[in-house]
Length: 613
Image: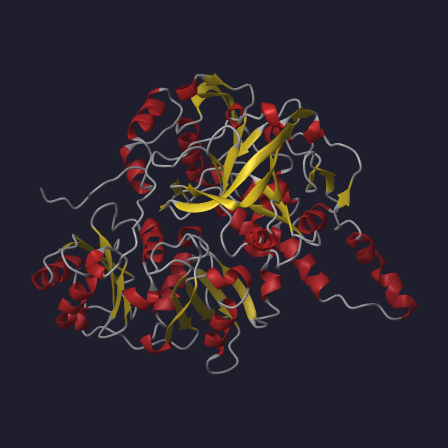
């Protein structure tokens, strides 16, 4: 991995694009569409990035879509994530050996452990071949990307953010976006629940500036480690050593005491003044919505170091599927053993990428007693990053594999009982926009571990018949689609042009309770009722369980965009949509292949399928 580009050419089918392309929108739009090719997706190297607005041409290439598919992600890890999980589980069960025989038997494992701990070097690394002093620092010289039309500016999206506690006893690696404000300042978007934010609180209370080093590039495994949900206080580079089977080699930053990997491409060093905050955003984030502007700390850049021939690594976040699908898949598999101590009868779990990971978790378990699934729900919501999960669905060991989504959905609907649905409150991800307030919102837990339930419907109607009856009660309904109609709990998705609260709409449908079991309401704009993949994305993003789910006389789900009709007082963010002129320009140049069907399928541009005018 010393030369990532050559490795990706050999192992990942690297696609090299030599055309001159703008760091604002053009490069990100190409990468956004590439990863939607699924397992055929390839990493991309843009060799001639430019910033047309400033008249800048970059010699530094931009590398994107590094985690292009499952096969490449597995190659980056060196083996299948399940094999790594087995190794972690073995370590967690490891007991100190007794007697000579046990000690000799344990030697290989103990020998391997010595490679886990990072090694600090006392000389400069390849990442410090070029040193740019404070007076010459110019972030414009880096091909930082602007991904979405409404973004607040250019953002570093694959920065490895290295921080340490005030007393120096803990070091952390996180992956947070960084907005470029000007030639020497970056917005630090570390969310309030993250370790870096906890360290920041320590420096603020002490009245001291906080050192930060941001690394870009190097071994792709550094990037993956940056998003890994390690327990509080554990340095993510320990995970690197475990996976690689060799120590991470770290060198000291030039202007602060933070240690970074010797072989990264670029290092941006600086200090965060706890007293200096600046509005960061908006930014089209991995939820597929814009994060609204909000004050965050500011990194004052002291020094930039780099290799002689650096490569700038970046990623695109927005509506799924994207590169984080494959990074999240590896994380999900590898961290399964770490969940089992607090949920010993957990067999497997899955976080679908269109559930935006923290918005939906599916879990399979052995059920030993009444309330066992509810016990698991509370355990999940009380541990580490699992506490951000909004919706958790539990099935028994007889359920289909968790990635067989159609069969699993049928299995769940055959066992769905409103009496076994738990709605509560807890912390939510800072990016969640559906909750009535930031950081705290509704949680939904579904226990589908029991036997099959009786049919919830007295009579089944066709889509046309049911739509006609519904429109008589609620004229704002403009389209309807039934899913899983052969199960005891069919799902009826309706599109509305909202003229009143959806609660009022659902109340109006009460006379039709014998025809429906579950009614999911979405807006007519930007939703295709024939596209269950993005419907799920929309629903889990847009609901707060305490406000938006009704359990009687049928299960009602309000997945519309909220406004004053719903008593919602926060600003509702917009979808991440591509720039239509940029898409057309890239199509004309033969750089992307996106017909009208693909554009609608992935929600690339605004649309309205149910406009009757």
